[in-house]
View (cartoon, rainbow, N blue to C red):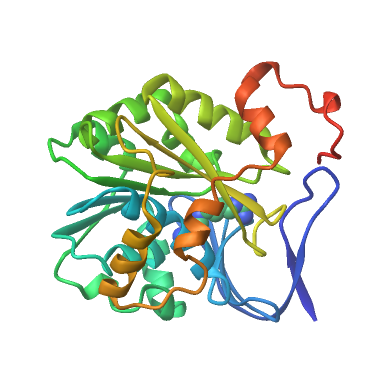
Length: 295
Ligand code: AG3
């Protein structure tokens, strides 16, 4: 049987058995592949990095979306940057939002996902509240005069087409578009095998936003499995959300979640000791000073 594995990181890689290659093409931006795999079902791979799978997409998309949406008392306008598979968009639309704008740089990712991974977006792309723009999210945010309550950065790793989505200028534009009561969340990589990227993203966000909080969950598809997101805001603290409020709003949304619960919301912000230390001391952090084995 064929196999797919991302390149080794620190001598470690995860491998999936492949039943069938469903798509293999080069877009204007990246190498796009869809495999049918034994452990994850169909999965999307961009430039050799696993992005999402029909089996475990709910973990990533629920944690990316519900945490900031619940941190805001009543989000009406949401911007998603990236997210071409539509999994984040679908969760945003579970809320009573007026409009969800998605700016995805690669139209091929949307087309391929709609065709081969339709259950990830459900009917999100046909929802009248959806505005889908194919273009550069960095330029969009720089030029827009619109205001957003929540911004989700659903991007690839901070290399290649996504690199500017992790820059200080980007976060400054985000702060302007969010105002005082908005919140931004970015996926920030694996604390185990991509710690430097996470530290860098967190440090840049801290230069721009007074409140910056990293949270984690486990995503079997991604390198290292333990994964992180970082939320930032001028005024909204995502750790200060009433569990009962979350429970009520989930009920009102009427859509079951597979991972996210009020207790998970709170628990996700409890960081392992090594990670709290790595984020506190930022650049001066020395892995060998900790008793824990790090990758
Ligand atoms: N975007 C984040 C995936 C990053 C995974 N990195 C990796 N496999 N090296 C996911 C997009 C899903 N909407």
